[in-house]
Image (cartoon, rainbow, N blue to C red; front, side, top):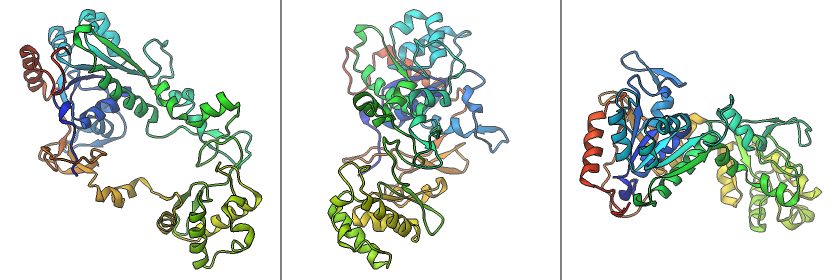
Length: 420
């Protein structure tokens, strides 16, 4: 097994003209193996000043945000007003063009014929046909997609007014990026002889896909879901599943009660060995079917009592031990990792997940996420390649030579037909 992109995409040319909403789509496409070029004005992309910032080796500010999403991309200078011919040549040479609302509007105004003939994937907060509004940020998109309503800070199981929680790390943008990358795959299946194509990705609609049972419960069963702290929104009260462990960490004990009799027997054996069984050895607790139904929220009085015993027990053991012993017993429990702990997570180490990256070719290297999949078969990829953050327009000449020469000679990406 090895970590490598897809050879069939290595010659696919993607021109990235996106704002914040298209950043993950471009990053994901570089991981898939595409030749992604971010087009920047002479002063650099607007996100080069996005928080959080660090001071680079030459005492210049560097955006960690832009660095993260630019890894694997080349950078070319883009001057639509001053050098329209060069911009149009890049546009026509690209196999797919990623745009935001603003860049799509500019292309439609300045070079309508070229953009109409291109394969275009647009990523924006609410879609290109939506009226512009003041709140076109992650907070408003999360709120208006229903995602923020799935979780909440509440004072108890029956809190009548829980406070919604905005998911962290721009989940709506990442959702749009996933669907944007899928749209690129679909766009590549559109023959060029059919003219251009436009895939309009709404981050609001993409984020809505992750609301899970919210839609089904309301549309099909007319059940209102109630947000809960540290868990799914539910149509009925349920216990707390995030438990403070003895080492100050947290254990996420999904559902508390196991789903199978075998796991319930194994869990009771473990609790018994620890001397914390309390009254769970009584006959009324022997059969799991007497404690819960197939629905994890269908719990009897005896089941709720068993959950209280389990909660007390988990509060007396370290989170890592609860995770390992729980997994051994067949229950879906996990230790909640702090962000800084993830770097040492053992499964990531086993899979050699981390990729080196640096601000310059001669600067210190840092770790970042590599491809999330492993592949079987031979590999032509170089192990340990270091991604270096490109300077604005650093690869302008190379991109022109690589893209425009291929376009002139009719060079096509591997795996695509001459009709495309």
